[in-house]
Length: 246
Image (cartoon, rainbow, N blue to C red):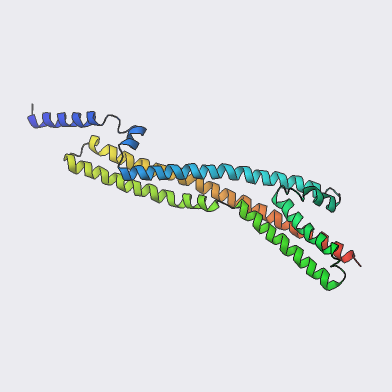
């Protein structure tokens, strides 16, 4: 039997015994290079953060739609707009109701001060109502869009952070080869495994964030169109009331 081959076999057995759990999930994390561990931690935090935002957005956008449906039912029911305003003015439940309340508040303020006696005043009032409703729509949409930049950032940056961890993991493998003067799989595999695991974490963080960002952007855009359409319809109603005044 070749003595050198016997020595190599003993070395490989010793190497395998020294790293019994390197390819398990816990082993990959505990035995990874410190830089790769930091990368893994960053990606896990980013993934948890993005999922928290996703869950919050699903709830907020869903609630905004339901409340808008309920408000539109009340608005188009044929009841008094003043009564509806008195009902919601103390606690505005949703962006659409807030838009209505802003317009009605300006309308009542003008009527209380008798600012609708001339055509010029009527035109000025109509412009103020449109402006204040536009500002309200913008403010409410800003609230809905909050944290969207986080999803966009996680979706775009996480793959590159994971790639950085991959590069460091591959460098770790080459370092192990140089230190042990051995290219056996038992020496190379742990570094490659941690490198691929960092890549996987980057994709796990990025893919849901990108999908959610695109979905929420579409939903918020449609809701913004809905608010704009309501503002235009409500403005037309108030314009007809102004024209009816003598």
